[in-house]
Length: 158
Image 1 (cartoon, rainbow, N blue to C red):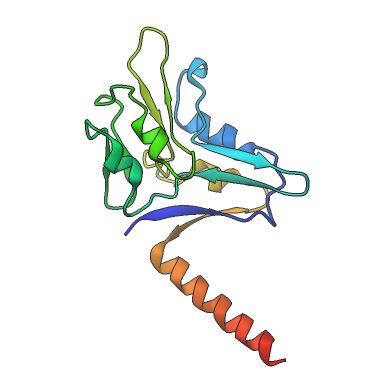
Image 2: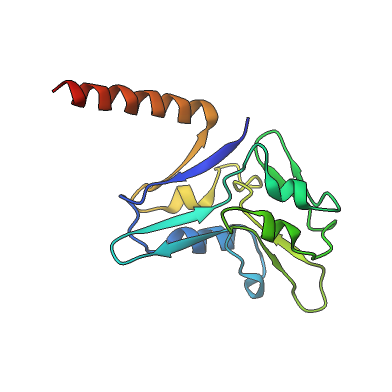
């Protein structure tokens, strides 16, 4: 079972605080400022988009050197194995993986890792001023879907 982050477009104000927190949580070097999510802004709405941690992830299947693998909670990235072919970038249906090629360095796979290195959990969830982001498990999502189905059934009866 994977975990993933759900974003509410109704609550997001497009401040991009999540992008900054994400990038800072993943680097000690400001020259390598790579957020693992991107806030998309339209006329009347904004929403952060990040890896969906797909259980049958196309990016994992596309990687010829197993730099991306399916972990217990998320899609794991191993930049040390990456050859920079960008097959994962092409395969991702959500467009949320990039391969950065810093000068004189090996390729860096940039995708959401749910801030696995942080005890507090995902930095984006922690800093969001409107609580538009929430880390979820499949079980939590199923419970939410059931709750919404019950609520919509109740509304139809009125």
